[in-house]
Image (cartoon, rainbow, N blue to C red):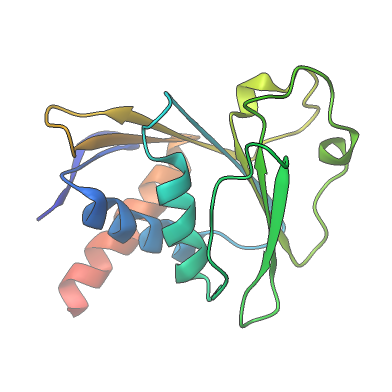
Length: 161
């Protein structure tokens, strides 16, 4: 098993492929409208995880980091709009993020801690950190109830597969 639960709401992924597997499980428990924050050091794999998450939802558009343009939008085959924001270079309020996503939108925000006035955002925070090997990542999901949903979905898939 390339994904192991290490504590409540925290998972250890051994490599980039297992991060992609984790993203698929996460995508199965998320529904629009939602806002998900992705935190972690530079190079921890936020965009990699988002790329796999978008693919799992049926987006066929290449996903890259919107660091220099602030945001990208992708549409899934089911008609869900995915907003992908990167706040790494943002130091002021982004008014668009204060509005809730529409009923058919999932909003993904890298570096959510850069936003100084959140209101009710984000619904979920996924934190990536470097693991014990160069390719390993620890992924924590908050609130932990969403981590439990991911774990349940993962184990039900394992039993079916």
